[in-house]
Image (cartoon, rainbow, N blue to C red; front, side, top):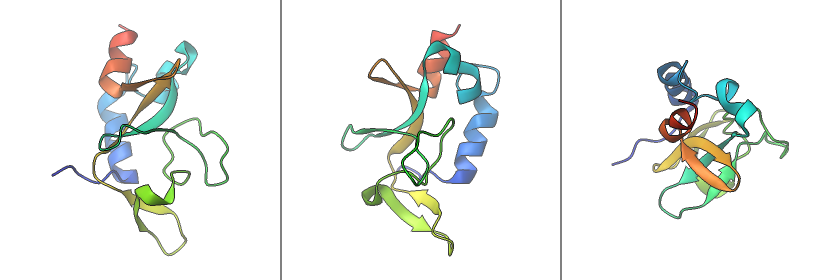
Length: 105
């Protein structure tokens, strides 16, 4: 079963992909924007703040309610449904972190 994406998991992924181009700060200059892919439906979502403004990195608070599985007492998202992954969007296409990193090799 797929693991739920959490803020902690995003930090782990950022550490794993640091220096490879698989993180927002290393690939924005090539037109990549942070986003999420729901592998179950194929839907892609841009990373946004809770108010809908684009976020410069992977932020969970702007995801639609149907993806949310857990919130903290302050209302911030702490987990989203299994099968949703963090990656990037460029020219209308979704790239996994690995794919984005390969584009920058």
